[in-house]
Image (cartoon, rainbow, N blue to C red; front, side, top):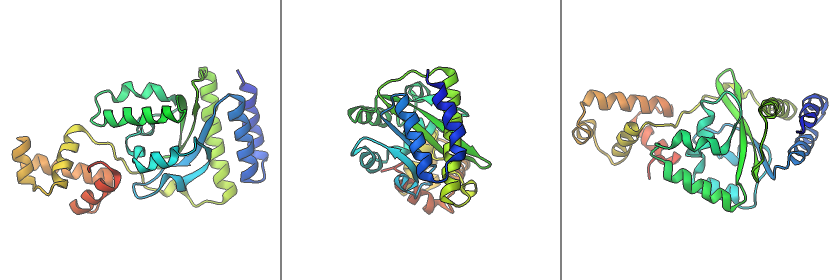
Length: 245
C-alpha cells in the first residue's frame, strides 16, 4: 500500500499555489501507484467536446482521438455507471451492470479498442456537486489492485484535485451546469429510432402495438432526458450524441 502518498497529496494540495503544482503532485501519486495513465475531467454536455474539458491527464497517443471520433463517451460503461455511483469503482466491474444493454456490442468494441492502446483496466472516481455529477478522475493502464481503503482515499484525492484545480484556474461555477441524462431504456431507444426515421406517433404506435398516448409518454421522457425543446430538437441531439445513426 502507498497510503502515505495518498494522505500526502490531500495535505499538500491545499498548499499548492498554482494549478501546475497540483498537477505535479497528482502525477507523482499516480506514478507511485504504477498507473500508466490518468485523467481529471469535467462532465461534458452533449454538444461539448470532452477533450476541451480535461483539467489534466495523460493518455495513450491517439486514444483520445479514437474515443472522440467513435463517440465512445456516449456508451462508455464507466461513464454511464458514474451517474449512479457515489464512490469509485473498477472499470471491469461495470461490464456486468450493462450485460443486457442495447449498446452492449459497442461497449465491447470500445473496451477492445482501449486494450489495444494499453488500457487494460483501471478505476474511476466521481465528483459530485449540488446539481449532481460534475466530473471524474480516472486512473488506469495495466491491472492494479487497490484495497477498499485505497479506493476511499483515491475518492478523496479526486475531489480535492478537481476543486483545487478549478479554484486555482478560476473556472466558472460548474455547479450550475445542467446535467444531461442520455441513458435510454430499450423501449425509448425503439421510439427514438422510429422518430429519427420520420415516423409519427400514430405510425410508431402501430409498429410497437401500443397506444398513441404511450408513445407520447415515451417521447416526453426522452425529451426530458435530453433537455430538448421539442421533437425536432430531440432528433438533432440524438444524432449528435450518436444514439441513432
